[in-house]
Length: 191
Image 1 (cartoon, rainbow, N blue to C red):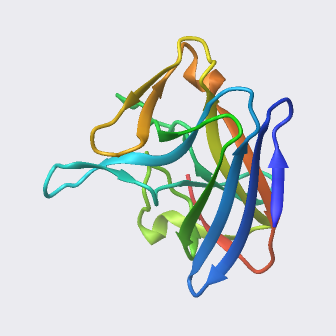
Image 2 (tube, rainbow, N blue to C red):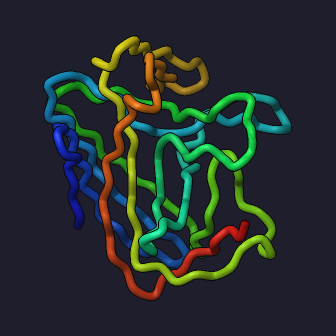
């Protein structure tokens, strides 16, 4: 079990990783020790190509190989892609009141492969296999006290909201659990 608390915050992320067959399973716990409400990243919006119905994708995460040899598995705001986008991808968030905690479970299929909501899995020829030193599970959150904060419910995802603030990128914080591993690799997207 690994735990982390961001400097200067009262938000703690605790996680317990497991391997089940060809899947990594992360049971994690986010605690908000206050003083105010926070919103934690839970899902991404998606549209079914056949029915054109919107829904929340709770399995989509951004996976990136970081320069230190650790793979970051992010439930939150992904890094912008190396190409222009018309509308930035924002995660859907869930409210966590002061003194509350949330227990979540995330499953990630093996082999690990770099991907994001901007760049889903590509052709296998676009990747090279790289050994990793470990995994960083990261969950983004934002305080409801951020300047210009607005939480707008989304009709297709009960309990989840779309968040806006005066400086959404600067106001978003990231809780992390660093988990050293052995014997794992990632399919690294080649430029």
